[in-house]
Length: 258
Image (cartoon, rainbow, N blue to C red; front, side, top):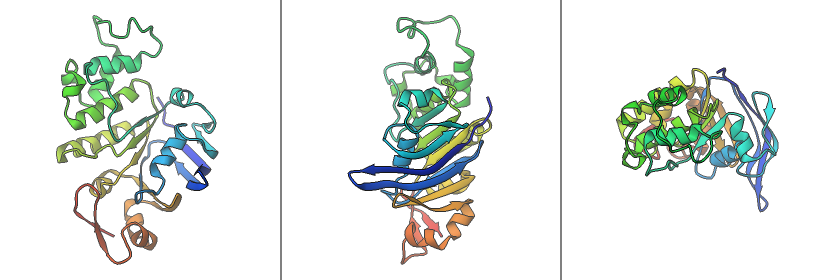
């Protein structure tokens, strides 16, 4: 599997005359771990919704050279683009293995999806190992810890051969150890995929982001490395606040030095 990049040009999403995304240009190269941050209402999730076809958009979004704007959600997914949501969407009454098997089984008939098999398909076994759930393969997903459910959802994208992963606040509500494990997982995933993370946890961003895009009012405010973004006066003013050189993060409550 080879990496592929995302190219966004003049992307616009308008709701009842309000521009939630107002002419955004972004280039995310193959293998990047790109964090997208910004205040609430900046347009981060709407941007991802537009890329994945959940909202109507104008402009151009290409992945691996193929245009996404105007395509149906399921067709975009089949092009190797997968996303997670803030709340993990797994089948809680089914086991880890069954969740992955169903995600991998789009081409199989419905009567065979839950059939117990003698062996585990290679792609499913690899995904379980990658997300650290091989030891929990027979546990119902509903009994997993919060972080493990998020990893299972990522695993469900891996078995569908997703090459662009769009992760919406993947460490929200996680313990410190779970956040560290997730950060390490992002690095593993980026070896042959492109990873985009919407995040509010600044400590997590500092440790694991390769590049950062800051959004404000539906537009790009700043881009660069973590150090470059934190030093940008526009980010200090708009994202961190006019009157303070430090502000609390949304999840940890620890100071964010500008």
